[in-house]
Length: 115
Image (tube, rainbow, N blue to C red):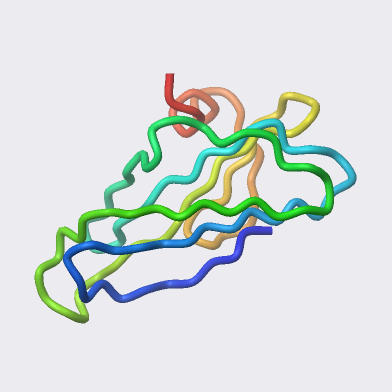
């Protein structure tokens, strides 16, 4: 489960804390958070590399810093999208707080991990 909060951007630099909750009995092998600017409808790879192992029934946390492209307070801010790989090698994605979906086919390559 991904802790999801929506923040309205008011500063030039934005600090975002991402927590990934692994409530399953299996480890998450790697995960990759992306920032989604819902005003510009653009996704950013921050950080540029996937995060590592998340043990079963544990929480992983990363702090992201991003430049806010919106100069005025109250303009759109960021949401977090997360792609992760389970212990069976399947890829999953949670986008903008929606339910988790398994990725396959073209979605698997387009929405997965950076190369």
